[in-house]
Length: 112
Image 1 (tube, rainbow, N blue to C red):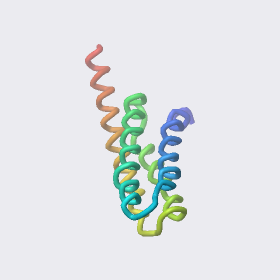
Image 2 (cartoon, helix red, strand yellow; image 1 turned 90 degrees about the horizontal axis):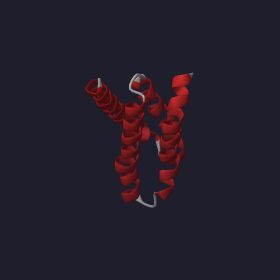
Image 3 (spheres, rainbow, N blue to C red; image 1 turned 180 degrees about the vertical axis):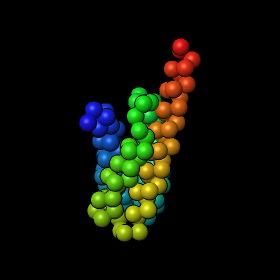
Image 4 (cartoon, rainbow, N blue to C red; image 1 turned 30 degrees about the horizontal axis):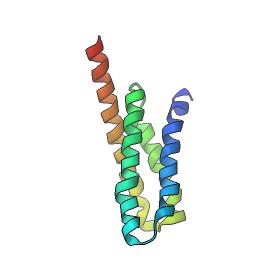
């Protein structure tokens, strides 16, 4: 439960990206920039900071939660063909959290 509390601010930022950024979509071009640029960057950056601040936590659980949180937005803003982005965003968040965790662990090793 403690680990989930530490995830909440990062998951809230990702939720904002999943459910507020699509409101900016006006045409196909903006839809693609939201789906392919903005949301993945938010996932990557939030996961990186989460991994850096919490290097002992499980990155896989965080990434699975990111993918699950995206699924309702598929039915709200997109169509069923966008469900694959849940996997993509989960992978981006896994990459970001692993990068943040490894940098934090390297920093801890150097300080010892």
